Image (cartoon, rainbow, N blue to C red; front, side, top):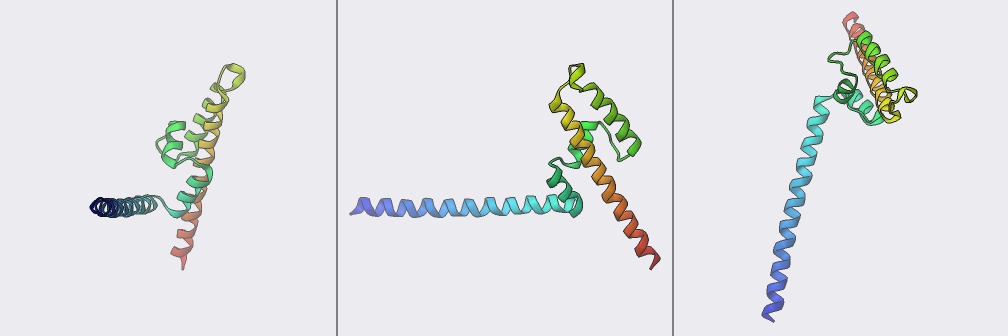
Length: 124
């Protein structure tokens, strides 16, 4: 009888501790997600999810520090040629370069759209 009570109480304690830890982990996950959402604009975050590469990762891949279209295109052309399979490059790396270029092009499009909307709001 006492053994059963000890097992029951022990299971309740472990269950409560597990639920508390689960709630804390869920709250931490929510906080991290909201912090990420605040860091990136909603459209930019959506582009990251769709393309699968964050803006920072795309900038690192193409070795650019700012969103300068000429610099992006120059680095893209160079890295695409260097990683061409016919010259001993890697298709995987080449596709990473292409995805990074797509992500940066999408970010440039989002910024242009935002600038256009700001211009419209300034006129009214």
